[in-house]
Length: 155
Image (cartoon, rainbow, N blue to C red; front, side, top):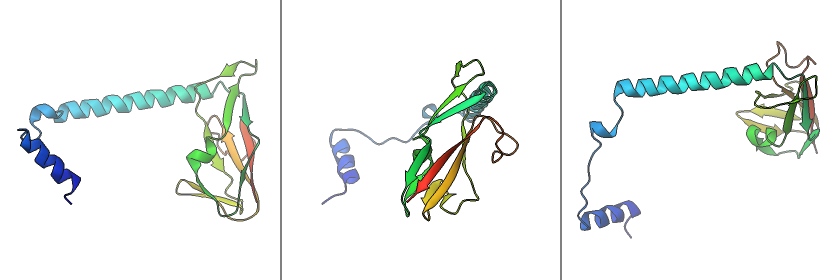
């Protein structure tokens, strides 16, 4: 049995197609590539600055659910675990704030759960704390508002 790639190449040649290598017209010039990369970097910086400035408007965070559950031995990607949380930002007036940067951290002092290499691992029965905040305080493990805590219960 022939590999699929060989079969596809033979079929292409049978209908008269000829292989062709990329030409200068097929790729961006070095200067155009650098300009494109610079433009993309500027767009990323602008998006981050916008999220950070909107984060300053958040006075209160409402996070639901108030607890997450895991079993000993469970390994879940940080992305999956933390996206189970719905985070809503509010101003003092009660007005909803959208488009703000959200930061998550698992309390490193816990023995029940550890975060390593983008994975959250449940090591032992007990509780752990996830801190959620909308801007980067000097020490996110203090109760400096607006930091909200969510419990992880490990069974």
